[in-house]
Amino acid sequence: MARISVKNVTKYYDRELILNNISLDIEDKEFFCITGPSGSGKTTLLKVVAGLDTNYTGRVYIDDIDVTYLAPGQRNIAMVFQEYALYPNLMAKENISFPLRIKKYSNERIDQKLRSTIKQIDIGIEKYLNFYPRELSAGHKQRVATGRAIIRDNPNVFLFDEPLSNLDAKIRMNTR
Image (cartoon, rainbow, N blue to C red):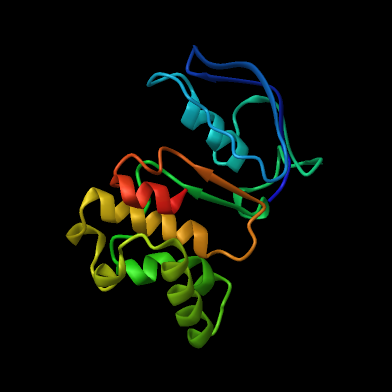
């Protein structure tokens, strides 16, 4: 993992102030939670760190490197959104393994990592691997999205936007 620093970030949507001069430091390997009511800017802050929202003032650093103007793909971040962001035309196993396909891993390596990831996190998705997102419950979609983030090789940072809200208690504990 990596150290994250957010320095003096301010963000407006239209004329509404969403993030007001936010500064924070998250140490390497630290588990950090942002809490607050709906509409308080939690997801916006995650998107700023991930590079998905670029219209803001302030700076973002990952391991003391200024990533403020780097594209999301250059930040080496794995993120799970509350909205899941699954590809509707891909089965669950294809959605989970998508980050490896993009990096052109061999089919053998992808299958190995898929099995290993599913076993490691024990999130109860095994029998749903050949289902499409439209055939999955909200909880299973969330499991697939979580698996896709975890399967990646050595991301600098994991960002989760309410990743456990649709998971049952046992799976929440295993995922944590």
